[in-house]
Length: 147
Image (cartoon, rainbow, N blue to C red; front, side, top):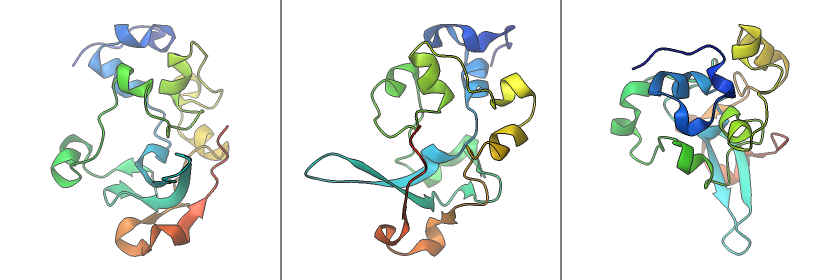
């Protein structure tokens, strides 16, 4: 898959190898939440409803390697796709790096711990419900603070 280069997160996204690309993800879980799009305005409304594969306690995919087999519409983010999708949070490491900005101070690549992200309120861990239990998405609208 590739070696992780020193401070690879400061490099251009297009130059990252697969291992570096995967390691850049902060693991917040927000991309795994269902969103609703207003048909008239195109505005994206966020929910607290997670994909059935997301572990709601850790905000990690329970079967990341095989997720497409269980959730066919799950997107595999790429440098090109990151620049196109409107629903990624502005705190997303992929978005920040695509815009030439530094990682947030709580990112585990800088702190060495995922706990800093949880403490900063950037993770959805423990704050979401599985789509299996949720019911209508309209009942689960939330504002994650699109920073």
